[in-house]
Image 1 (cartoon, rainbow, N blue to C red):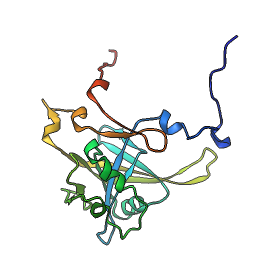
Image 2: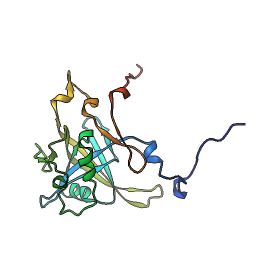
Image 3: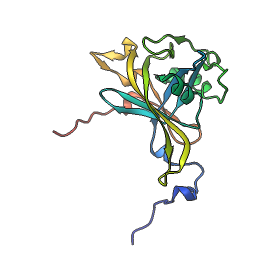
Image 4: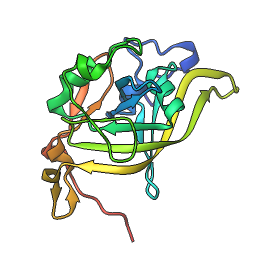
Length: 207
């Protein structure tokens, strides 16, 4: 007899666990540390763990916000945003920018970070972050359930139009992910991971 060791459930009926396991299963996830400004020039900076890259040429990245927050509204109004790399050294500052605050609050000031002008978009990048991607919005989509019911969740996709990388992270022309010490969001109420050298392995696609 095969022992049933699986915990099975249908999400609409609840998971029956202490914490939703899906974000942990599909993780750790990169963090989009998104800087924007509104039409009045007020700055906003917030982290999003529903974030990734979705195309090579042109490079397309997207973040998803549960609730139409300032980042989404600003990106919708200005058609621009910036992705700043979240690193271990900046973890505490990043956490401070996750605060729920109104558009009058400048998270750069709140977290003691320095906004630096970008080369193409109006939104600034984080001076302390070693990597920044300037993006122009390609689409903003309200997500839906399988039955078509609209959710209060918004995905913002942008084309990367300018890239800024600290030269210390470039080794023989190759970006060194480990040296950047990026942090990633895991499961549970407060779990994160740091990319470490001992976790790296190489594997090439079959020809």
